Length: 127
Image (cartoon, rainbow, N blue to C red; front, top):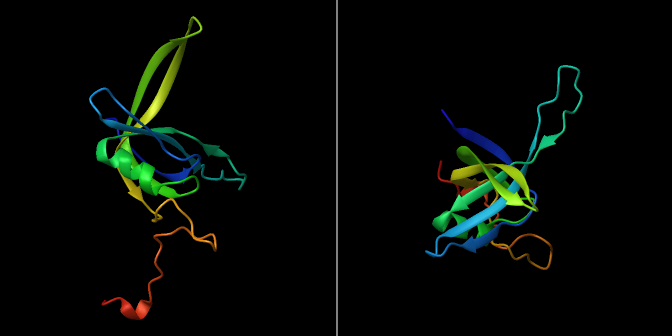
């Protein structure tokens, strides 16, 4: 079984390119903190590369920016390519689903808060 679920923060804005058939492909990476060891010492972080396709890729470009938190569900894919006569190996997480854990358009208001964020009054929640 090849399945991963990750939660982390973007380390850079998504970069979208289009294939010859006009399929959107977004690439970005996320930072995932490692669980501290038994001794309480910080174990650092991991920075997997994420690849997203189609409309979901376009939504990532529109709504996500560096620092935003996301949940990724997908699978690991390895590959390779030639660079300067040497073979370079890659490992990516191909996202089947990207859930935005923080919402908003990419632009920010003058007070520094991202536009698209709306404060919710608890009295307005019907349950």
